[in-house]
Amino acid sequence: MQRNSKPVTWRGKGLSDALDASDAFDGSMLSLQNLIPDPSTARLWQCRPAAQKIFDFFGGAFSGGFSGGFSGGFGGGPTTRGPISVMKQVGGIVYGMVANPSGGLAGFDSPFAFNLVTNTQIPVTGTQNATTLPQTLAATGAWVPPQMDVIGTKLMVCHQGFVGTGGNFVGWFDISTPTAPVWNAGNLTLGGAGGSVFTIAPIAVRQFFNRAYYIHNAINAPAVLFSDALNATMFTSTATVATNVLTFNDNVPLTALGALPLSNQLGGIIQSLIVFKNTTVMYQITGDPIFGSPTNAQNFSGPPLAINTLNVATGTLAPNSIHATPKGLAFMAQDGVRIIDFNANVSDPIGLDGKGICVPFIFSVVPSRVCAACNANVMRITTQNGNLSNNPQQEYWFDFGRGIWTGPHTSTASLIVPYQQTFIMQPTAVPGQLWQSDVYQSATSQFVENGTNLQWTFGSTLLPDTDEITNNCMTESTLDLALPPTSPPIVINAADQNGSVMNQVSISPVTTSAVIWGGFTWGSATWGGGAVSVLAPYQLKWTLPIVFARMTVTATGQSAATLRVGALHMRYQPLRQLTNTQAAA
Image 1 (cartoon, rainbow, N blue to C red):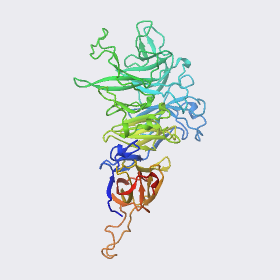
Image 2 (spheres, rainbow, N blue to C red):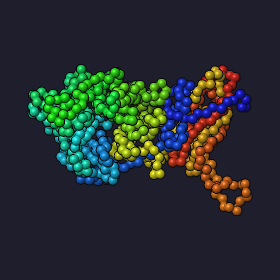
Image 3 (cartoon, one colour):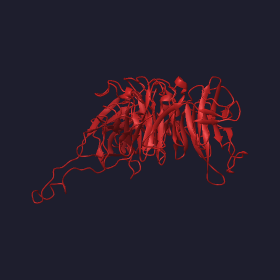
Image 4 (tube, rainbow, N blue to C red):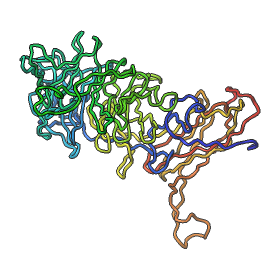
């Protein structure tokens, strides 16, 4: 049966949108769910560690650092959970805002602080009531996500739940003593002319040249306002009209801010701030008004304040997708994830034309709910994929060193921030909780996530056409695996171009009984005995010849620390019949 057959090897390299591997890179995969690259060997895959819960804001009684509305009625645990709307990691502490689902302050977000080093909650003092706290935003649908950033000793919070009650349009943590944060709310003080600055709640804040830059989308007058240096709540002006205002040509509202270091032709780094206006244009702010100013008593030198338009007509509707990476500032555009590099060049979408992943981002159901972060070499982004039935939440990882995507992983997040060698996140399935999610295996890695054993999937794209315009028959194949001795069977499917399973087989770990020296006949027992858990080719014992025009092979199993998945080896036999998609068997 092997006459005229030829071997075909498929070593999974990375995830691809490609419908046909003939036009994609060698080793393109339809699914690498919950699989990550083995750091020792190219194109060898191991299991993603499970995320672990580190804190539940509504798991019981609260410390005195929360408002009375928080603790009221929660001693036995609430029936609903309030989501975290924003968080930021500063040093070893993550600060943020979390909703009160019931109690005296139901309908408002309260500030929190959590020490990631000691895994303990830090009380947040200060006045917390219906005038100083923002109203809780809707948990679903399009929104303007709250934003936070540190300027001096203040961690500013821009939140659309601030409606001006009591004159409060913005909030902040005073972190002069990081382990004793104090909550405040108010407005920017207009120095010189007197009065206040904000007329509506700003939508974004970023630190730039030690100033707080805010997006203030007043009706028909969107602008970026910037504070005094190291004083995020002071806005000095020498006239009756404030002068620390930057406008951007028209009345289209601004969307988001992102910080980007720039390479200097003379060496070193120049800081810049990127202003996103919808998906149509981006602006770059450089310099500071103090440079060249006659009031510059310290004689600082540097570039003057300037605004320039980037040369690519794109942007983002996903403020929480903007994040720093080793290659520049990344964001989810309308056509995929792009990066502004350190020379201010905007990349093409990462993964265009089947070179990676773009489709889940193009069909993102609610772009403003997308969140992303990068830590060292790994970028993670969660989106709701409208290109699939039921619009599932999916998380994709991009490895900058290898230049590959993996996923879709089941560790989807509604918020995520980097911390040391890991990530802190709020999973989409369990709002009101902080979880730690590692991207590398360690001696303490676990593989049960939120009470469920993780499952991995290793699935090829439609394997390349042989270009012989005939059907093929696959009669032999092997899959390189390292299986733990307690692993449940691995299930392998061969499916046609319609996803219909043509045949299915399973593989179980190879084990032998331990033997005692002198208690067996030489040559009749395995040396050392015990379980075999090394990488080896396992035969796929198909129950019938696999006849196909196009085919994908998918393996699925339960995650474990020592499990590895490697190359798929197949033997193709071209048939004499003309390609016939109905002839699959």
